[in-house]
Image (cartoon, rainbow, N blue to C red):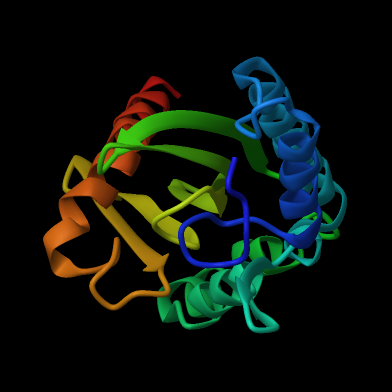
Length: 211
């Protein structure tokens, strides 16, 4: 319930104010767990609806204190812009990733997923947007974490499945944005990021094989 600007939690101004108001209303200043969970779900829904309506422009910045904000939307844009494989060979999908929802979504399957897991003995809540695009016999996919409650700011993953020698060639890359050099994005913690996306990659492969 100690919501405040900083790097411990990824919250915007409205979310911080809402948690502080809830704490002030509680008798002991700790807050009721059920009320906290209700507020978390409300914040999640607001973030999801803003993203669905405006795409990256609807992702509110994290408050870091001292009038500093972290724009995870800019980090995601940079990840897409610097993907030469995507921009050169799949410009339509690149445009979709940058301009969603104001882009031609023909041929794209999308889904939204939220999950809650324990990371370094703390709960990690994540909102993701997943897209699968078919171009001929090639499948191109995106897994975008446009909100993470702590440890990292955002994650943009992408990959493709190409037919090759009677089988399939699978390439999957990701970029994690974090405020701390030694944080989630460090080499020691790469296995954790793979654990976050591993189940989705397996699910994606099974789905493509079934088509």
